[in-house]
Amino acid sequence: MTSRAVCCVLVLALGAVAPPCRADIYAYTDSAGTTHFSNVPDDARYRLIVRAPVETPVGEPADTRRAALWLSRSGDYDAAIARAAHAANIQAELVRAVIVVESGFNPRAISRRGAVGLMQLMPSTARRYGAFNAFDPEQNIRAGAHYLADLIERYGKDKLELVLAAYNAGENAVARFGGRIPPFKETRAYVPNVLRMYKALLVQSAGSAPGAES
Image (cartoon, rainbow, N blue to C red; front, side, top):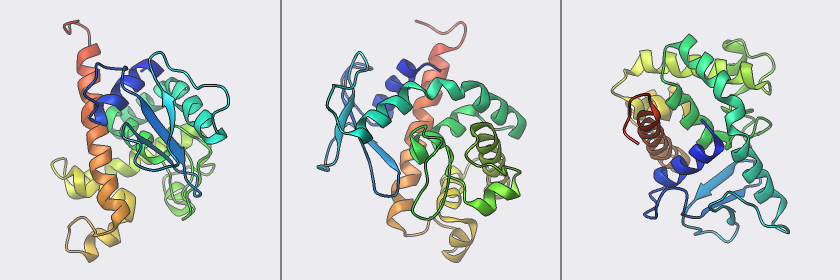
């Protein structure tokens, strides 16, 4: 998927009402290294990063320039995402949606809890799935995809909200709260964000499939 297509999907997933790729997208990188995207800049830290065409005005803060660069490089990971999704027997759109929300395509991202790389894997999870260099995009994406596949097998394809809650907060947290989404602010925001992105990517993929109407 090209960076322009990712731009379109971001706008769609964020609920923009303007024509695709015409709505502004804002971003900021917090102190933990996580990049947040929105079409509604309700925090003073947000800076404009995407307009049509994609551009980052000279003089913007460094975190804004980095976010725009990550978006422009998103296509670099298409092949790795496709390979990992195929190997794990899950949809590439789900893997991509997790990457968008977890790291904004920043392969060097590190969270305040120590999760690393594109899919923000904890070191123990990375090792469990064979990603001994979790900053390596290929290893990171492969491990994250297999982790998602195991969570889907555990909770079921019709319970993606629990799959994503476990990915974010841990399987023990989901179990501790009776098999429901834990009442953590981060997780309660994370699950719908990924689901919106996932659904938007499915729409984008269907629209770009051979034989689809233009």
